[in-house]
Image 1 (cartoon, rainbow, N blue to C red):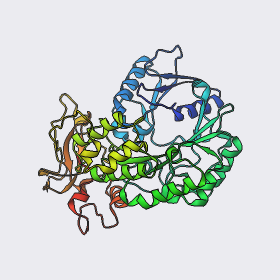
Image 2 (spheres, rainbow, N blue to C red; image 1 turned 135 degrees about the vertical axis):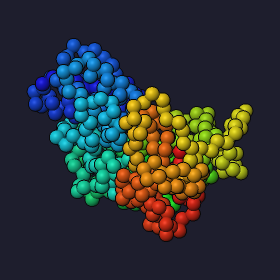
Image 3 (tube, one colour; image 1 turned 90 degrees about the vertical axis):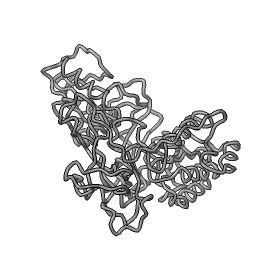
Length: 457
């Protein structure tokens, strides 16, 4: 067979790991394989075209790519897979692909990626394990990979000869019982290591920190997503520093625009740089976001989110907030979030509140596209009354609903919690973040409305 592998023309720093594994698998079967990026016109006349995908808000590149290769090779089978296809399969089917593959290609998982297709790339990317022991409501991992199953696999055969660096995309390697075996194999391979998705600060002890010091981890990545994690993060940084890791080489992902307030985010940033580590802000996006940086939490305003973005550009370094003394002084001496993140010469804009906004459907769309929805973890707390698009019941101000998007990512209607197509999953995810008292309809919950107003459109 002749196989064409296509990475759409969206931005990414990394090569498409899934396609490289598919290449190795098909070459092992004797198939002819070609890899291209974007819209090319290769001489190969493929039997199958595999198109990968990344973030949901890059869907237009993906749809354009599928349409292009379907027209270019009308007799070939076009298969769409990847993260967007797995998170939003109904929307992905609107691309016109012959098949939408969700999840992993199990047969290809055991293959070392074929790096000959990306000769400019010089690091080995791998998973030693899949899934996570946590179930965070903001995270795609529970849906993409589920819980951890069993032990980590061996990684020595996943390191390409000649590569000096190993990048692990494990989502919680410390959550499996044989994580130290992975460290031993990386140590024997003599490569530098990047646990790119971060290590779980809640699991790091002095012993674990000393074990990690046996390999060349640079940088160390952690996460500080909610205020209650403060003791664990501070303890992890102390353990890592005691083991010999430089505080300045500890980069901590710092989630904002989710259940937090601007003041809580400011507090976490201040904590981290005061402890001598680097805060790397991560703006929350709903898992079914079709437009990047459009979502605004009810605790934030568009102006405040822009202040963070501007501060990252102007007083940050590479989008992060390092522990420079001047920055520490600015954050610790500030009287408010606005004072901490304001820049000289910037003007204040009117605050924007968009909670409960229902927009007009995008014109000239077919009914299936106008009524499209693939709802996951995206509840909104209403600031105006609406009716459920499914059962017609009235949803009052401060009720929670679920936004329906049209094909172009506009929010056009709401569903009540009882009409959500995956109530059980939603309930479990949000309880993991908001506490055991959380219920989907808000009944018998000790949490206040402002806390429950976790996400909004």
